[in-house]
Picture 1 (spheres, rainbow, N blue to C red):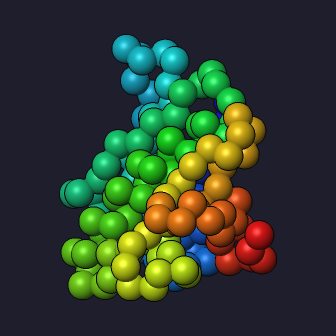
Picture 2 (tube, rainbow, N blue to C red):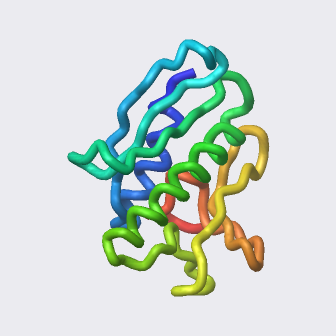
Length: 132
């Protein structure tokens, strides 16, 4: 399992939305051989880093959904600390209201969707591209 392959779609969505893109530092924790760990944090800062993890086994859509949830939690905090609206990614159906939620549409596909209407906005990694 390649951690970058799971993280890159989330980072692409952060960039597409003009959000704060974290630096990623990889860590190997021997006591958890079933997971790959990393720390994400504001560029150039080590304080305030958050650990994220991806299970080595499991389906791609589920792994991506779980990682997107973790990064989204960090992002909301980072945006709030920067004095910016803390709704990432912002729901296009309800602007200024709430963020989209990551969801495993299938075992192999992860999506961003509105938590109210459940309307699918896009596949994770395609936030700046065309909607469904």
